[in-house]
Image (tube, rainbow, N blue to C red; front, top):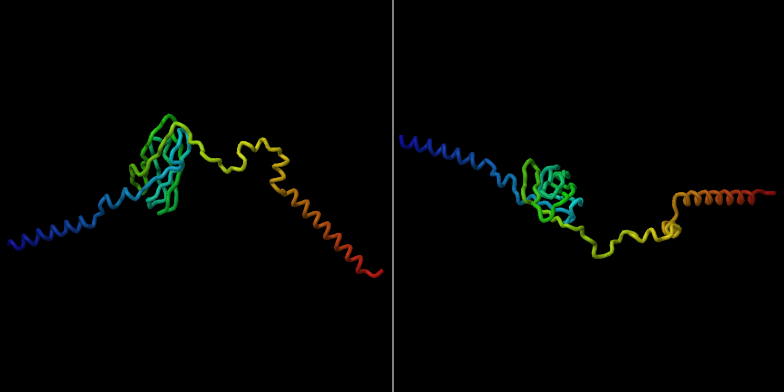
Length: 179
């Protein structure tokens, strides 16, 4: 009788062990370390627009929220690739705020941070933007010369080339005819 009782108990223990081994653990099913969020620009001013880029999500949609955001950023992308979205920084906030990403049906807290500054960053080197504030000081004729020929010039050139080709053809026909 002891052997039967021991067999029943060991069978129950083996069934319980098999059930626990087959169930995924929450830490492995939704690994917090895989989901990362990055904000561009890294330091933004209140009212500024930022892009949120999230990696580590298997799905193609999600959201990113923060106390610094005016509203959640709607994230989209291709499954297994980075998800991206844009949002604005709330007015009246400063400091560093954590980002919480919801993707694959689960929230991932503290996967990134956004730094909010009181003033907008200024460039330390000139921006190569094609003239900037000096553009209104330049005469419009000089700007037109630098721009090159437009569609109107191309059409006039084609018409003149066609007229020249017809004139050459007519002249060569006249020379070939016996008089």
